[in-house]
Length: 293
Image (cartoon, rainbow, N blue to C red):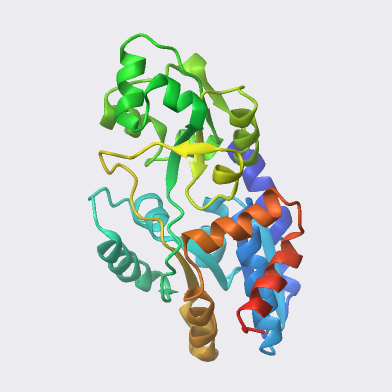
């Protein structure tokens, strides 16, 4: 059912794109804070450089990628690990440089160009309340597995996408040799996971490593001691046809990419999720702070 809803939502978001001018750059984004922020930053930056921009944020991962391959989205920020595993079905364990090189190679025949990767690695992570993790002696995912295999019941909050992804929950449980047990997995929207963990509604939560709520809510990220999660370097991806027509896009977007790392993204994300500033306000403030506009 959730896939039908995602498809319907994608149709609404993308439905009016045919009316857009051919000269208009269509900037896409996914449906969570960091992606909303990157879509806003990209749109504002390109507008400041003289482009007409149509921003289309709020899509799920698969519909957004499909829209770009179909020519409906011109540019958005994707994560190297997502392309490697989800889009290209590569299961080999690769380091950051090899992951980037592989997705650049595999996506080129699809008409997609990966520009320079940022230093923001928004990999998935498991988090617990710091006090709870300390009391239970859990510092790594292996520690977590040992507790559960020893008979302790711990609940896990996850978004629906990670629950079903080929690089998601079930393969991770297999890799670490444990299972939360289906009744103990609570599926919810990504943003709600943080609040549920903070409020004690779940014991462990799926988080993104660059999320500003991790330090703000006093969470501790469990060490991925088996190196299960691949690198998810956030990178601007542009349709080759669009880049060929607008070669200056490479320098513009690479300039923004060079300003981004884990700490910067955590700070910016926290400005939205914790300090309750608007996405557009945070985007504009950063671009001005960095002298990009």
